[in-house]
Every structure is written in structure tokens, then in C-alpha cells.
Amino acid sequence: MIREQLTDHFCRSEFECPCCGKDNVSLRLVQALEKLRELCGDQPIHVNSGVRCVEWNHKVGGVPTSQHIMGRAADIVVRSHEPIEVAEKAEKVAEFRHGGIGVYDTFVHVDVRMDGPARWEG
Image (cartoon, rainbow, N blue to C red; front, side):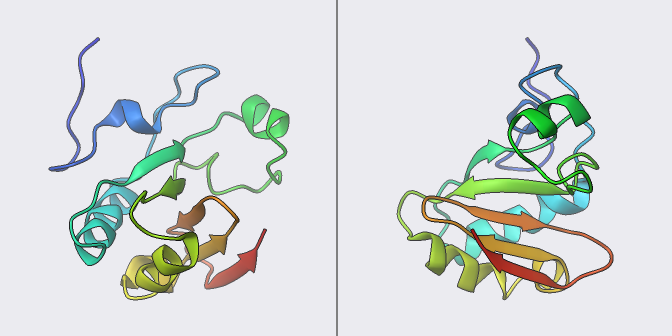
């Protein structure tokens, strides 16, 4: 498998739908994740969930209008930071500040939606 590098720290395969391999990830999202990584002290960001096809999104309980379907969202973990800390740092990234940030017990959802901002806790 060829790993297409999108930015310095992220490759396309990290965002692929586990169900079908759909990989239409937004470059704007990936570039914003690079900014977030820098704010987290250049600590690696692990993508738990990136692009989802409609079927996979339904299977994992995502809302029908999920930004994941459009390739504009990622559920992420920064192992050296608590989710609330990652969310606070995400607020400093313009694309996420104007997009979506959801804080869960073990991860953070970030997205670059165009009709934001949106905030929630899971």
C-alpha cells in the first residue's frame, strides 16, 4: 500500500473509512490538525475516525448529517493530553473555532464545517 503524505505528519490512509476505504478527506481539515499538533507541543495526533461512508456512519451511530461523511471531521486523541485540554487548544485554531468541537471521555471530535460554530459534550 502506498502511503500518500498529505502534510508533514498526516497521510491519507489515516482518514480512510474502515468499511470501504473512502478517503475524500478535506485538506483544510488536515492542515488545521497540523496547527493543533503544534499547539499540543508537537505531540502526535491519533485519528480514531476520519472519513465515513453513509453505511459506516450509520453503523457507528453517527448523525445522518455528520461532517465525517463529507470528509471534514476527525475524532482524535493526543495521548499526552486530556480531551478537554485538546479541545481548549482546538479553540485556538481558526478552522476549528469556526467549525465543530465535541469533547468526549476519551477523544475529541474536530471539524471544519462551514455553518459553525458548533460545540457539544458526548
